Image 1 (spheres, one colour):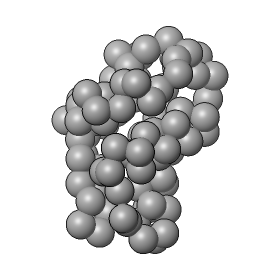
Image 2 (spheres, rainbow, N blue to C red):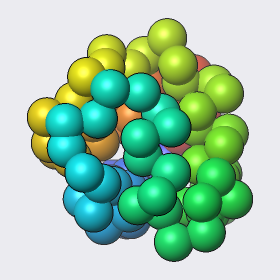
Image 3 (cartoon, one colour):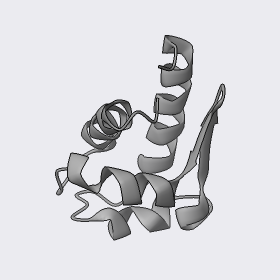
Image 4 (cartoon, one colour):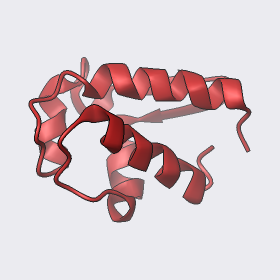
Length: 87
C-alpha cells in the first residue's frame, strides 16, 4: 500500500497530464493528445511507476466514460489503482 505522499504525488502528476485534454472525453483515446509522451507517458512516485498505457490496460473497468473534467477522471484512476493493488 502506497503512503499518502506517494498517492498525492501521483494524483498531482495525473491531474497535470489530464487537465489539458479536450473535455468531455468519451474514451481513453481522447486523452492521448494531452499526454506529453502519448501512451508512453510515465507516472512515478516513490517506488510506484507505470505508463499511461498500463493504466489504460489495467483500469478500463474502473473508468466510467464520458468524463467532463480532469478531477472526476483522476478520482476514478486513483480508485482503480488502489483496487488493482497498483498503489
